Length: 115
Length: 233
Image 1: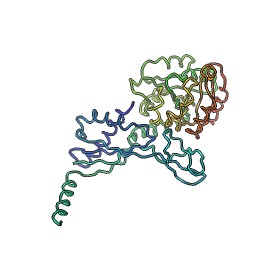
Image 2: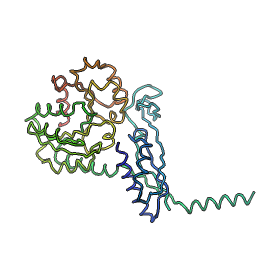
Image 3: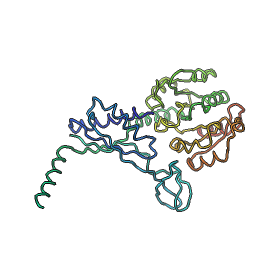
Image 4: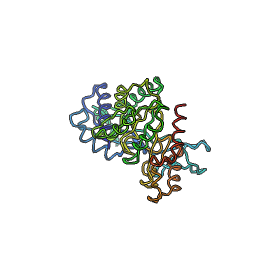
């Protein structure tokens, strides 16, 4: 479980950007989390509640924009959604397995709401 | 009707004043990735090929490395960085063959990070090496997210772990250039189904090359050494 160290990075980034904007408090931190980011949003939220104490985000909410997995099929020159829970990227048209993940590995601080 | 509309717009404006949106769009692991990029440059400049070896605890990373270091001694100039939560048992075991092994004790952290590798590189004489093995903390989840600056990732899974390991840890297996199925000498006793394991791997990690090895009997090691030869160009 490395969610606590991830949350510490999230808080550093959020506070850095908030200070640059002259904000006094962060109300919301919105993350963009890919299905293949290796992160469990619930565990992140739990860690966030502990780690935010004493920071500009002390009263902040953590919001998550979930990014589903998508792959690219070279044979069909087409991007397709992967809804398989194991991340098996089978092209719906030709049935070939794709090794080219083009979406779903994101783990970003997307934006903040500050005052 | 008009009054109500005005009321709504007043509410909206108030909300606007209370909170401002700040666009960030920054990767949570961006600091780690900066360290990784620096490590990669440093290794490249020194002419060192670095391989990140990953698996769950007890898949045989240290045993395979010990055998590899012994078999290839004199052929390559090898070094090892070993990550564990505690103890330096693995480094001691690997040093037995005269190889430089730096132990990183993560103190409970479940993965190696690029900054830890940067410190380990300081402790190694990089100009004396051409092949560096980084034995990561035994864990198939967290280390997958951390680029260390390696040239390639090698994921081991042993025949005693079950054929569906790749299905359970897709992120890790998708990042592997090479998958080593280890402890094949135990395959029969463990009732390991090769076909099923290869099928899981082909589906989850179509990019990966797969080799089957036993560090105990030596079976499959020539192919593994062939892979290493190829990496060193």
